[in-house]
Length: 166
Length: 288
Image (tube, rainbow over the protein chains, first blue to last red):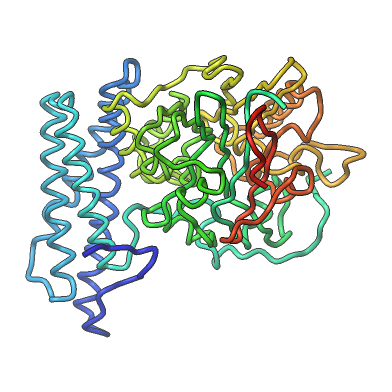
């Protein structure tokens, strides 16, 4: 079964107006974003490991990833889930497991075993994609993206000439 | 006629792109149609792309949806209009790492990829700084970096540090650092003599209006509104491009320019996508 969010938007809505469901979904969405950021950090670290002169930021990226993983802790697994969020939590648990394995590989400088590390990161990416599809959220934080959400930034037309302050 | 054929291939469009994103200082001027495209260069021995679009089924598609991009069409269909299959592509020149320029790498399994090292280092720096700096991550799909990593493992990634002349015969890559992004680059195609050059500008120049402003008789540089780097550097890079083409603005090819079809032959595909033919090599047939 595929998760083609671009074609078939999907989210779990079996339970509506349930405060607990909203809380759990919000918590899981936070986890998706956190793991997404770790995945981004690890992807760059992996690239940096193999490129001479590009690994100067490796330690900073590593620290940031460790901070994120520590801050989110085991949040995804810490209590019984409603059916609507259990599936997403399972995918997030797998993503976390893959990311922690990748973290250990980086710490042991085993990152040079590139194929295995790439496999872990690719699998984590897929699990995150599945979790975000189930939750109806984005894998990565796009809140600062481009012009921002389209309709929140709709611009009215008030003229056609450039006015650059002159 | 010359050694290179060049086509601009639209693969999607945003009918409601804010004008202020395209032109610095153009506030409250509504929205405009912005084509999303990549450029195909065909030579006797190589098939090259300048940028690769995005994948609508990946996070890049979500970014695209959030800014009103519609009509995404897969590269096999888009390139098929010029008789090229994605697996035929041998070289990819990434102008910068925004999702709509790098996100389609997965479709081209055999291509060698060229990108400025500074482009990736800058994203690393931003990521290391943390969430408060996330506005600088605008347009980046972190998942695209995984594909770069994979290409690197496969020996298909080359990180450039500045200019690379003749990356293919008659095709040159020039840095435009600290402009649209920290490590942007643009492509120069030299077809015959030194006066027969094209500049494929990436997003350093979005449209011809970036080069002229509103009055072509009294031109004024108006740099792109969306930029991580400096407006001054954007203008300097645009001036550099104009110098390369002898101030013939039409030989600068902005990939998001809807009006290209006014200056070059073109047609619409069955999918409603514009194919613009910039030049056709000796022995190659027209595709429009």
